[in-house]
Amino acid sequence: MPRNIIIDCDTGMDDAVALLLALRSTELNVLGITCVNGNVRLERVVINTLKVIDHAKNPVPVFAGAESSLIPDYSEDAARVHGTDGLGGIPFPDPKHKVSKEHAVDFIVRTIIEADSPIDWITLGPLTNAALAIRREPRICKNVRMLTMMAGGVHSGNARYMSEFNVFADPEAARIVFDSPIEKTMVPLDPLFNGGHLNKEDIAQIRSASAEKPWCDMAARIFERTVRLTHELGRPQVLDEGAVSPPDLHAMAIAIDPNIGTIEDYQVFIETRGEYTCGMTVVDRRRYDRVKPQKDRKDVHVVMAVGQKKYSDLVLKTWLS
Ligand code: BDR
Ligand code: CA
Image (cartoon, rainbow, N blue to C red; front, side, top):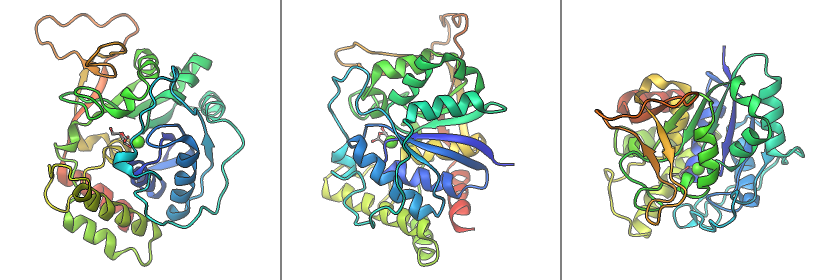
């Protein structure tokens, strides 16, 4: 029986492949996709998301949400990594479907509150919509089975030394979500270098199915573009030549099957003010002096790594079978 899930995203290239995984998975029933400002402006995020549902051949409803962070100070986007259109400039056709009229936050609150039993929720972008929903209706926390977030970094950041983009883009929202009593899994940047690769051969397999499967075509084009962008931008080659390691895809794979991950439980706090650390996920890994968990503050399940083969098998099986 597939699990019901809501996906919140800021569709750039890695969100797009994560959405394709969810929309083709037999384990998940996607109730709706909510969009948030992030990698690119909200309006673009919505267009990109609509293009993805077309390619997935699973036109679930798409909702537009927050147009800026809670405190609109963080004007930075991630166009440097995802291209100004968020999809690396790949000329995908204009979307066939339209965005729904309901606001993303209304959809999230309504769907979770009305669910007969606790449902899954995943965020792949800044946590603005999630924080607004929790603030609007705190009772939703009890009706979420698991909130999986691509957020943060244990060992390092990307937007700043220790700050990962999704948290850095709206630290106050991240704090509201991390401080809430929701059961949470954090998929940080760490699996990027710890098992989360798809190599040249994996991408070639996806490419070989692209004539009959439009979702494979979209994924292959995005992966191939990601590899070329690394060269064009002169970014350091940290993975094997021709390999990709998209953070949002790790998070979606974990939401589908947490058994592919190495997971450790920690208290996690969000830094909102540090000169060098604003947007850092402070993971309490002290062994001797660890503070007692505060009442009502649950540990976060932190994904330290994913099993390389289990991960690539899950992705390939979902798209190719
Ligand atoms: C995260 O930031 C965004 O650029 C990606 O889509 C991903 O969600 C990685 O830090
Ligand atoms: Ca994202």
